Image (cartoon, rainbow, N blue to C red):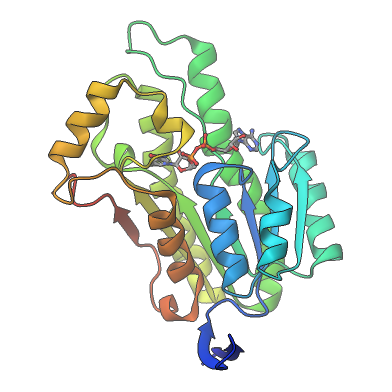
Length: 261
Ligand SMILES: NC(=O)c1ccc[n+]([C@@H]2O[C@H](COP(=O)([O-])OP(=O)(O)OC[C@H]3O[C@@H](n4cnc5c(N)ncnc54)[C@H](O)[C@@H]3O)[C@@H](O)[C@H]2O)c1
């Protein structure tokens, strides 16, 4: 149900485009996991709307164009409800009502409990928790109207197990799991699936800030013996956004190479 077969390549080989005709909104997608997810969604046939805090999408438009997808970029700070509401309205006007929301925008400001300032605490709570709340609140009425939708929240294994020096980040990523399960209960009856992805350590700028010896240790402790790639997370998001995941609701999908087994 809901699958589209598309002729691709010179031999007209049949390939399933899992997100054909879907409108997706991905936050914080100018780089990293959001960017990889936006590109994968475009390749799967979705129209893709992206926001990030800066004025530029760092060339994502031309990459998405190659995939032949409809695309729009909006500068937006997800902690500002007025900006978020404006962007959601603009996406509906430009591309159509949103079918898929990926709450990806996130930040770290690490320090041990003793050294963590209130500013660091508030900054991370603002983006990682309030941002997810505000974007979801803005998008959900349209999904309720359609009686369908997929919401994917980026949590982290840190939200499941904690991490040294990440009081603020761990609190938000656990909070994202709490919101995911709450919304799965509230919105499931309205045809909306809400799930979380909990990445392990994935090679993006966020993780490249970590000391090399910590990263090497992480690799050794990971049964798959590598750090994750952004595509590993994008693949999980495509699956959860697709009809293949229609009966998955309130789940937390760890994508960590088995790091925390
Ligand atoms: N990389 C990892 O190993 C890893 C692991 C677990 C979870 N995650 C989560 O995945 C998500 C993406 O992580 P990433 O590694 O790609 O990070 P990243 O830092 O590479 O990208 C995050 C993006 O969010 C944007 N952003 C930050 N504040 C924003 C705001 N207020 N409004 C709009 N956009 C904003 C940034 O500009 C950036 O483009 C985050 O939620 C992160 O917590 C990442």
